[in-house]
Image (cartoon, rainbow, N blue to C red; front, side, top):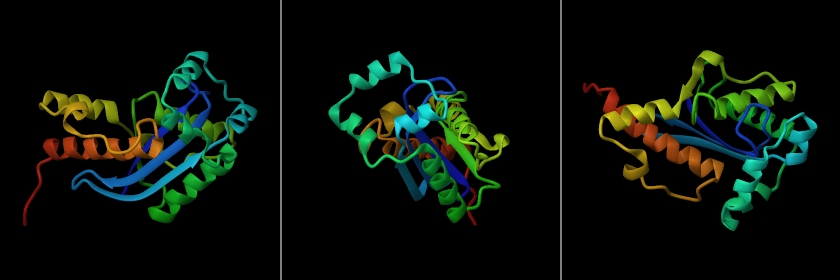
Length: 186
C-alpha cells in the first residue's frame, strides 16, 4: 500500500501550530482495504520548545470538546521529535517513504502542519511534496457524484481521535475513489 491517510490534532490551524496527536493508516483506495495503523501523542511543551505557537481560539475550541475527545491528548505523550521519528520508522517499516502518497484533510492543513513540524524538529519529511493528496478535494468530487461522506459513511470510534478520524477519512476517500475510477475485471 502506498497511500497513507494522516490526521492530526493541533493547538492551532496555521503552519507553526503545535501538533498534539498524529493518527495514520495505510489504505488501498481501489479496494477500501485498510492496512497498518499509527497513533501517537506529543507533548505540547516539546512543540512549544521547538518554536510552535498555540492559537487561543483553538485552545478554547478544545476546552469545549467532550471529556472523551480531550482525554486522547494526554495518553502517554512523547517529545515531538520522538513522535516524528516513530512516524518515519512506521512508514519505512511498511512501505519505504519514496513513493508514499500522503493524504491529509485540506491542502493547507494536515500535510502542511506535519511538514512544518518536521522542519522545526530538524528532520526531513518522509514524503515528497508532489505526493501530497487532499481529502477535501476528493470529497467535493464525491458530492458532485451524489456521495456525501458526512451522510453516507457512518463514523466509528471517537471524533477528534486522530487515528479514528484517519480511518474514517480513508474509508470515505476509498468509497469516492471507487466511484471515480472504474474497476477492470479479468
